[in-house]
Length: 557
Image 1 (cartoon, rainbow, N blue to C red):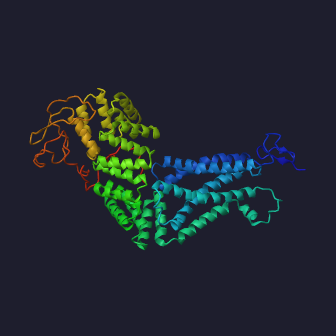
Image 2: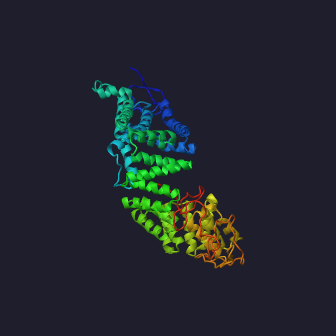
Image 3: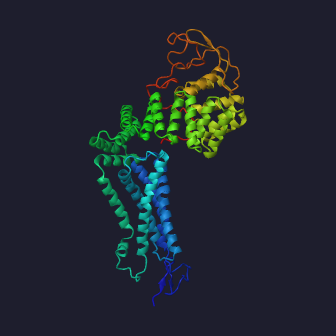
């Protein structure tokens, strides 16, 4: 009678033994031997390195961190869930399994997830070519993810059944079945079948949709030149195909070449005209127009997107952001309130509405509540903390506001002119700012201040509130200081002329600008490339300009 060898330690045992007499391992249910353990527990590290190599090969931004995310959150996690799950199922039901079955199950599950994600792309193009007009943008993304798992889970079950059946002992009468014969190849038939099905579905698409799908996949992996080539072929097959025009426009606008970006903007405008009922196209057009400083047109496009999807908060928040750039605080508040009705828990909307109320000096108590709610939902984010500090200061809680600003400075230092301005105001309120006028004059000259009408007016008012008597450069007219609400600035240094270096063209009160009285700093004309408070500039804002709205994270739909 031959001895039974333990799969864990290799020791010999009696044929009828249930447990190993050397290590105590189970003999009847199978298990991992030394090779199986090595394969199972070392493979996640291989996936980690594979993710980094994949990110490097594709030229993805920050390839190490991006690759770690791919290797850990996608490859490694799916491997452990599937492989560990198969192990637990077999042990729970007493099913015999080979020493390397959990490893094989995990590897299969990982690659099958990738194959299912690729298969979902042509399936979506075939079944839902017009998208999901009745869903919000966030729900559309969830539905696409749900389609991936709707394909993945049944195929995973088929593959695991083949892997488990392969390790079952013979003699149960199923040797002649085709499924049993197929199990000799493990889960490979399921994976290969998924790949072949995806390829056939892609080939079944019309040429313009097939090239568009390949371009979309290329853009997802930052392969921009090949994606643009696919889009050219798609548009050659059908010149008025809105999705291809839209994607090409987005890729060109995101590039550094300004001429190609202008051509991309034309593509976005054309796509929006061809598919006038598509809110996504309208919203992306609004964002591109905003980037180019064409704010009036951007507001119109965002309003159209909000009209097409009034149940979606994304168009409303974009509309509010654009209205802030236009200096329309009341309109921004109205749009933020609409977005907040649709998604009361969104920290970005809570933050932006609170900050806008603070800048308008309206409902300061409500603004403080909104800022606290935003920080609770998204803590340790410097833009939210800045809004909270500003709300505390305007509600008379200067000490707590200063401590909050110190948290930002200690964590990230100087991140924007807006935060530096708030730090200067709060520090002066605490009596800790040595040279307030010099600090604000240097701040006023920064390009990001000049590109933001609301921030520029706030800095202007703060300088004027120092009590400085400002004279025009030619007319000699003095201006009176405007008080920054709640700032409590001390009197300044007499009637010194404030001249920013270099001065903006045609300051108020000069011969070129007419006889209008001068302000603390010139605000009647915007610097080149920045939008005027009363309308949109025809040139794009400076590339180093910071956002005009205080946000925790940009959430482009």
